[in-house]
Image (cartoon, rainbow, N blue to C red; front, top):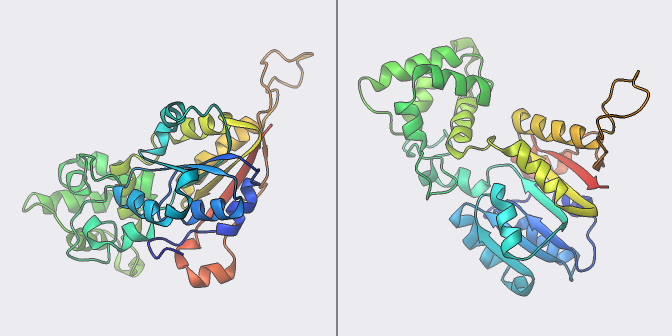
Length: 309
């Protein structure tokens, strides 16, 4: 298995996809190709389209999936562009797809990428796609205080968004904030001493990362479109790692699994809504205790699975 990134709930994902002979599957976020490799190993006739906007991930996937190159198509792009990829590859419908919305271990552990608050000298970058223009440094130093406060509150669910944003603005008036260590100190200073911990900067770093990469923008529409791109009986597996993205996925599942929404006192249906999916996981699957002990980053993961009707 690749040291680049440990695939979370690997067996549960493969089982959840209910792989079919000669099926066409889409790995929306290939990362270190752990899930992709598991799919190709489990079903020797499956074909796979794998996407990622991180160039490092695509190169690692190319290495990991070399033994299966005749059954794999790699594309460096955001998974929200999946429709154009399917058109390019002349794929009309999918037998299954996986979205792993977590940040990869490689991205976190690579100091130069600037995702982790534990690396003091790491540059404030946080781009998953190094071709993109917006960086964490730009957000921290150039966004208005009100916008920083909103991002920290909405994307990080940070209770002390106001004081933290204010400290950042005061500090950058003296000099530009350039490193993860500088930002972490400012975040810690905006949190009451009794509530500080080694991980108290996590929420703000998460919020900035989400903003830099536009992680929640268009996610609802993309999940809807992916589910509607499945063949009848096809399955979608989605791994989420924080409440914001999980809520979006949960709402889409609920919406597409609902039948007529007319008021109960209507004698006949006038809305015309039909149930499109069956939710396989009434409650999301979580990592086993054994997996959490082996990979602490799996602790917050939730796996939701749906089947196209």
